[in-house]
Image (cartoon, rainbow, N blue to C red; front, side, top):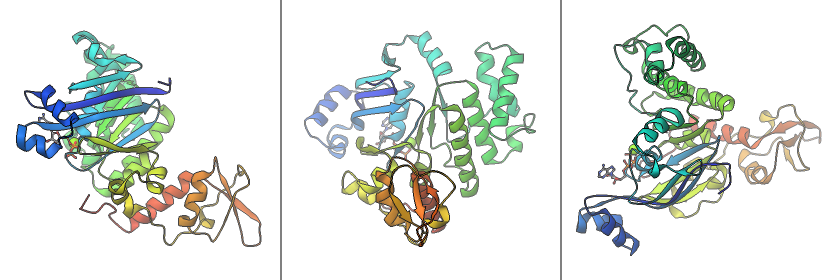
Length: 350
Ligand SMILES: Nc1ncnc2c1ncn2[C@@H]1O[C@H](COP(=O)(O)OP(=O)(O)OP(=O)(O)O)[C@@H](O)[C@H]1O
Ligand SMILES: [Mg+2]
């Protein structure tokens, strides 16, 4: 295990039910999730998950409802314990933590942002943000200072003395984010943290999270149903189906080389570039390597070229002049924006 790996799930399986171990043995022998439910009344949550979560990166978990996303993320702070397998955080098996150690682990190392904001209604924004710190016996003055910094970070300066009920949903969500950030935890777990927000506010939050992440480099595990969101935020995307990991890779590679038909269908709608060309995206900079794109080339045709490149690629005008450079990320985002404009990407069948 490389030391750039923050969290490592080793062959993690979870069955819900009174006789989980025997039920898991049946799954290991080839029984399906549906059969297990029908014949044994047990629910398969996860099966044989091996997943490396990189330090300082955002790993997105995607999958249909019931595929095991929340089950997976809840294993990471031991809200759920596996039926078998190990979960290592910084190389340490969290199943070995005693009650006190676990409490400290949850307070200091890992914090969770929920979909429902879970704010205390009778406490102000700032009080909500620093609540955990005070419980943790951080002196009030220091807690306030730290809290204010987080309030500012999520763009809520001036609202620190308001009550949650006086804020919009998006603002409440940001309070939840500030609270998670205030703990200084190195790991942030976000289970559909933005799903309750309307699209504009949601995009705002996504951008804000990216900005924060560029500064703080937390290890973030982010669950979403939304492929746009996954591509925008995820350094890696993990796709779950029926408790099994089907593919873990960069968004780019998943779009380009889906591991199987299921993943292919899952992402199909996003992989279409239509109108935009490379020219408008060119920005000042020095190209890496000799590969060049043409200004009139579509993003779709630039896609495989750019995916193979190591850094910014030069964009040439028709007369051969260097217009500037584009990065993989820029093209990716342009594709996403384009699809965003064409409304929903993920069909109801996935
Ligand atoms: N406490 C539990 N007891 C029994 N079954 C459970 C429990 N928690 C989850 N499950 C089952 O485990 C499977 C995975 O559930 P999970 O909540 O992880 O799905 P999810 O991918 O997060 O779905 P959603 O997108 O709807 O939130 C489902 O079949 C679910 O019914
Ligand atoms: Mg869930």
